[in-house]
Image 1 (spheres, one colour):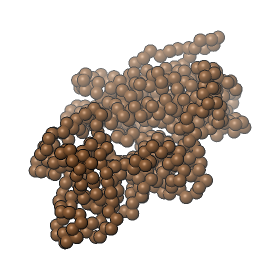
Image 2: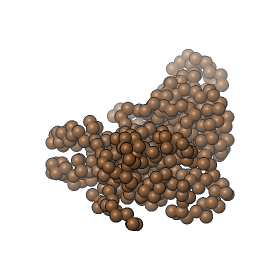
Image 3: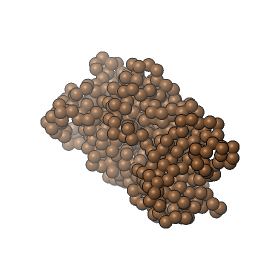
Image 4: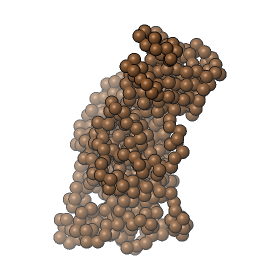
Length: 547
């Protein structure tokens, strides 16, 4: 465990309390097992959970561990480093800075409450990390049960993550000590995201192996299973399992981005605070994307190895495994046998099953054979695929589309007439095989202005690679909709695209709310304008307007 710093430079004589003393009372990680209520459609869209993991984001309400004036124990408020106001109760400094207090309501908020939440939630998160390390990782009995390699996979670099969180929290606390009304915290967030938060990428990228190792240990080592169950019963864990603590770093890095978004919503436009908030948000966005990409890369590698083993080539073998290749969609379709113009064949058995593997740069066409194997008989680069929906579809040709390979495995053009099980399945295959190239280079702003919007009212976890995981209150643009209840949409805050059931969402009919959603989205993702660039050049790290 990293050595805690004590004290701050200056003329203060009292001893400095470290982050470990920030919270009193029961300990609890930031995992909220029950999803919070959806916000109104006019609010800024929530952030996604990881698309390939069990992470559950906590809503942007009261931070865990801070329940009002009684949350901070003792005669001093360790978080702020200043004594309480006389009289006790709700008249302490923390309450005066907290959301909804009388002191804060008497003047413009300017993002102070959102900054306060970022700091207090970091304190709660740090305390939960300390519990993970001291209660689980450093347990002497557990050390004897686990091989060092097993312990390394299970806990990864959590010590590095905790050390960064400790230093981060200390700097945030010092900033709060400088003035009762917080000046800014996003400059600190930006610097740490750029220079220190790579430890999160390392931790999160290990998630696939971590989950597998945890399941195997529970199944294969009775001593491990019994000890973990015993440790989880400790009141300090608040009834939460070890797995809830292990996903804390992934939760925190995504929630930090949400907290900075909340600050960005409250600060003045074109102000210095807006500039630092935008910088912090963009840097956090890079970290979150790198985390998600790390998770995907690990799972994709294993998936590609598994697919390669199942393939038998009837044609010239195509190397499947590549560092730059991943699976987009796979599944069974029916291929029409015979010429598509022959209407006499419609009364006969026209279709036979084929199985498609669509990668980001390659299409492989095969037939399933005994032994869970697939015999490959054609392939083509994804860039040389064209799709076409039939205009005149009778009952026999319902959900049929034409797939054209401009250059297949035999270096010639080939055409396939394929039938899907439903309209939505046909649309999904057509979208994946040949994305709409007319909108590929259209600006993000142009795509949004005339799109219908929906808001997630029920969480949804993607079941296939072309689907989109939804969190409560996510706001999306509807790009395509099928009659059997599926939507192809683009999420506003991260421009991620995918399919999802329309039953998980509600359409936003109010044009004012749609306009407000777009305004907030553009503000977060807008490019640096010349005025902001000039202000940024003049601004040096650490220089702030004091209030």
